[in-house]
Each structure stands twice: as structure tokens, then as C-alpha cells.
Length: 336
Image (cartoon, one colour):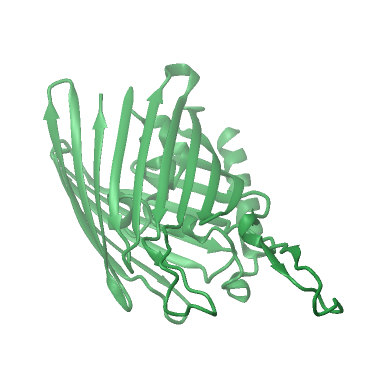
């Protein structure tokens, strides 16, 4: 009965995704940093791991997968994004046994140094600003049956550009299901759902004369009201299948469909080979019916180091981008 309920959710969510505007809304969303792929493992698989991801990394991909975290897991990572931008992440997950699992994560996009210019000083005022986009995530996940896990994320997002800020609250919902077919899993995720986001702050105030004022009238303080913007919500349905699974070798094939509100839908494919659960090789490919799409294939790998009662995972991914230098993620994950 519960499996049927989960399948009903999949059907309803799919119907919802198919009604979204997609490419007709390109360029109108706010909070688009939420679309940046996070972490070395996920990006090396081109984001195809929705049906397979577990542990602390699942906070960024499918919140239900956090339910399968070990007692304690922590992850940290860094990516050199294009145009001197940087992305940093930190995540922590704790398994509470029958009560489920909880997690917290922080992701931060640093735009880098921007030189302030004005119409009267087009060469620069000498002021340098560093816009930052930060999202703090809180997760709860629980294994409901021997086959089904569910999870939720609540996000607090803040964008800061000089003395202007925008704050938003958004939510994710995820399901991970082990099907009766041995080795076949699927996941469903609905991400970035919440109210519109809007900028506010002292930067929206300026002194000026209004139309109709006397020439010698004092300047008045004028406050701009900035437009509100929707967040880039998405729907994802992913499959994962263990083509080979034994004591030494595992080969997992993955695919994920991603329906986007504010861009063309994406089709993601990934493959992971692991030897003795110590060495990992990964590759992926993502495509979309959209001109000037930035991404394509991806490559990566990982190594598990046994530190007695603890494990350290070191992962790397290489993701070429159209027109820009390749993205390279480095992440370190600890289980303890």
C-alpha cells in the first residue's frame, strides 16, 4: 500500500512538472545560484544520482537519501567556478536510529571582487564589493519501510550585494524507493519551492528632484521598490540500477529527468564503478533542448581511506563548460 502511495506521488508530481512554463521563463527567476551543481560526487555523475545518493551528500541532491547516513557524516568542498567565482560547501548528517536522521548544510557562492562604477565615474570609484549568496539547509529524513525513505529540506537563503539583501525561505521534498526488482532503485525530488524573493536595503534610496519640483527645491529621498522574483523550482525523477554487484566490484548505471520552471528540461546520465568500496570511477553526461547550454560530459573519481573506526573519502570531479574554463570540485567526506 505504501509503495502505491509513493507511486501516486510520482504521478502527481510528474503532472505538475509537465505544466510548468520552462523555456518561456528563461532569465526571469531569482536565486539562480540554487541551480549550481554541488559536490564532487554528484557533479562527476552530471547530477544523475537522484535515485542512488545516500548520506550527507544527499542533502544537496535527494533529501530522502540522508536517512541512510552512517552514525555521523561530514562533508566539505570547494569549486573554482567560472569568472573567478568560488563555491564552498559544508554539510553534517547524524543518524538518530528509529527517529530518522537530521542534517545541516551551508553552501556559499562568492562572486569575487567587483569594482564599483557610476555614470560620473565610469572608470571606477575605488570601491570594491564582494557579493555573496548563502543558503543554509536543515534536513530531516526517515526510513519508512525496508524499501522506502522520505526526506525534507528547509532552506534559509540570503543574497547580499553591498548594502542590499534579499532573503528567502524554500523547501525540498524527496523520496527514495528500493523496488522489488533486485538492484533497481528510484528517487523523486521536488526542489526550491517557496515564496518569491525580493531585494531591499539602503542601496534602494537616493536623493533627487521629482518631476514638477521647483529648480531650487531641496532633494527628496526616493526609495526604489524592487521587483519580486520566483525561485527556480525543479522536479526530478531518477533511476539507478546495479548492473554488477558483488564483494569486490559494483557498477551502477543512473539516469535522471529534471523538469525546470525557468529553463529547458534536462536529461542526466551517470555511471559509477567501485572496487572493494575503496576506489571509485565516475562519468556522466547531461543534455537539454536549449541553445548555448553550458554543460555536457563529466568525469571524476574517489578514494576511501580507512582510519580505523573512521573513514575519509576524497572525491574529485571535472566538468567542462561551454565558453568557460572547466569546473573542478574537490570534496572531503568523513564518517565517524
